[in-house]
Image 1 (cartoon, rainbow, N blue to C red):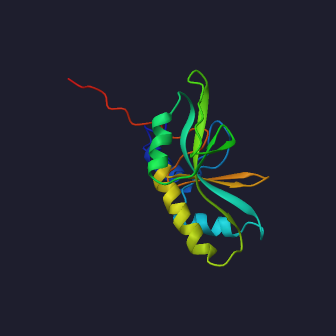
Image 2 (spheres, rainbow, N blue to C red):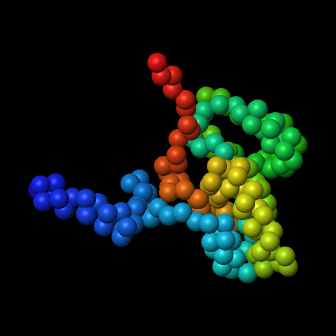
Length: 168
């Protein structure tokens, strides 16, 4: 009926402009954030909160990922979080290649409210967004985790890797 009365196009425009998309898996609203919005949200955390700024690299995929760890070492990163546990990259550790793993790089660890905090947070967020393909995770030590994205994406449904397909 909408196409016959030509209202369909107007309804699409209305819902595209006024609507708020939500993740079908977790139900959270899907929004994009700028670096400044992320920094502001982090600075609103309670004073003296200890946080880690993480860049998600691998999400629930099987493998050992030694090349990823080697690349991170070469880039100067010191710690990674694998399946919720922090590992020092200077130590050797082995992952079970038959189990799914989630790997995040620890970009920075800091305490909210320290002097020079805003510029440090901004630099760390920018670095994490580059490394995490537009996604950054802020983990409050002993508390919750906050996910931010430059894209319209939910952490439950992150955009898949772009795989080139052969076309004749």
